[in-house]
Length: 127
Image (cartoon, rainbow, N blue to C red; front, side, top):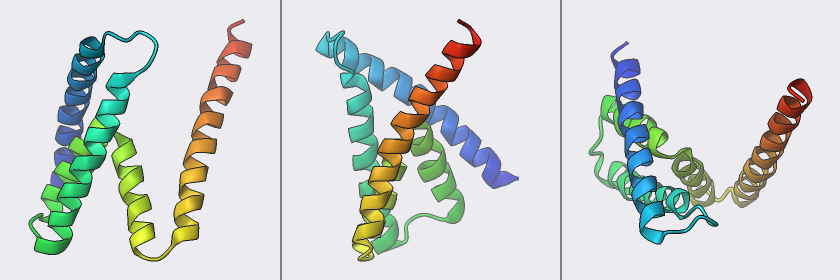
């Protein structure tokens, strides 16, 4: 139960940070035509999860509880793209290049397809 609380608390922190950081970047760029805020959040999240996962792998600096709080909670709430990218990098590091490519392709195709499907279903229900 303690781990669930830590993940939930971290997720709340990460979500608030995502909202704030994305808004700051979007306002700073003054762009209405491109989601620079989302891009910045995804880049920052990927950098942080790469940095921290290297520390975790090489120095063992995170307990299981801390990993749940930081990796799953804060970074998962901040951006799930960082988790996707870290999973893909772990596949590459493990020599699973085909699996890494399949992971990338599946996330992009299925993600875009799910958005299209969700929009289509909502349209047909509430037209």
